[in-house]
Amino acid sequence: MRHSSPAKNLRRLLLKGVFAAPIGLPMMTARAAQLPAIVADARQLSFRHTHTDERLEVVYHDGRNYLSPALQRMNWLLRDFRTGEAQAMDPQLFDILHALRINLGGGTFEIISAYRSPGTNEMLRKTGGGGVAKRSLHMDGRAIDIRIPGVPTHRLRDAAIDLGLGGVGYYPESDFVHVDTGAVRTWGPNSA
Image 1 (cartoon, rainbow, N blue to C red):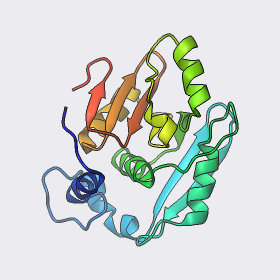
Image 2 (tube, rainbow, N blue to C red):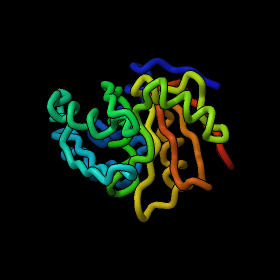
Image 3 (cartoon, rainbow, N blue to C red):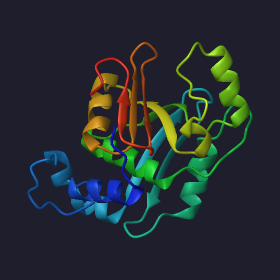
Image 4 (spheres, rainbow, N blue to C red):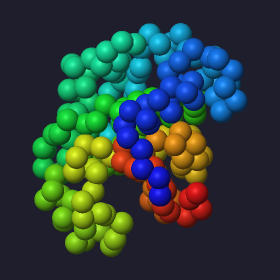
């Protein structure tokens, strides 16, 4: 298991061409190479929460700065839907989602779980049949469970692993992928 600092992870993302002008790096996807002007100007995400059916399409970064009103709207959407508690989510998590959106050709992220209060996390640990960490990054606003309609979850998993940023968990039986801003690691069936 390799551990990387957030600064190293962001540098890795920049080197892969997701937020930089195309410079011919072999690991950069053709789609990312075609979109640098859009990426440099604004970062946009689209969500639908599967439990509340709330939807949000938002530009959260203007190319130079994160946009506080947009971050607040995303934090509210990604709240613990069981308790109504919201937490400031790690903006790097949004950058990972943005990179996935570009690499997979767009789409709306369906949210299965994002922020979890400690009480909700403990309840899920006791009743969820496993798979919920005692010290989950969901409780720190650093993890999200997602899928994209029309994109097989194994493809979403592979794209997340290819980024080399944070943790990637694959749950094919439940049809979602977990991504987080923790140490680089993978788990689930056929994970690297």
